[in-house]
Length: 325
Image 1 (cartoon, rainbow, N blue to C red):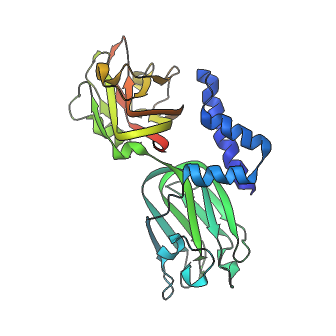
Image 2: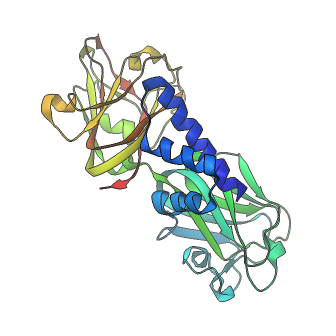
Image 3: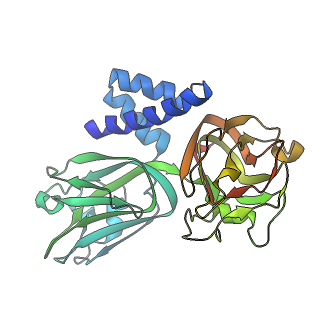
């Protein structure tokens, strides 16, 4: 259970960092701080399971190679204790199993359940990979029929891979659960106060953080007074975190002073909604920063630069929440 607590401690530290900036304690921070202090397994798993949710359910799985009828989808069918409901590769080189979450998520915990009847060693030294990162969790061993928790401390990605490096390896999985929060921005629509050439508002929610050497995948307004950018989530959500990626090639100062506003009112182009945070410190070119919003409720997320004439440039905006209310 240690990695469960690692996940909790990571989120507490993230929330605490934002708390020190804005002086407000979020509901998530207070709850997880209590869990971390009490070290209650039941409370921790309740948070992981019911608040974050198993986002693997209903998604797409593939593997290579496949052994007979032990298809990849059986590892996300919700059945843990039936050996006929497990996935298994045949013998292969660098055998892998891959889950496509169909969207970008912040992944906090991956739970792996081993086969109950035999062959528990088929999981030994398997690596868990999220997104495009080379940072791995390595499975040393899992007893037959047992579920182990692996902390991914908020790694961002669409794909979760389990791979066993080497020659003539078999990978068997009876269940894979992934607990995290979805990037809600990818489901929404975006507009901005004005548009500079082809750098439209939608570029900031295209799922592409970095475009080497150019701002082709960023949004940019004209040089104007009080520029703004607005995301419509198309539903009402409790928002816990907003992440902004700055332009990589130049002009990093353009997001300094940006106010993040969240709410349901369209008054003043949504710029009168409650404020989550302000980008008070310079964000280096190409860097990504996150701001805790403590479960603020709203349909609209605005980036607003008041009392200044400039271009507002955003290369990616991500919004993470616990679900609509």
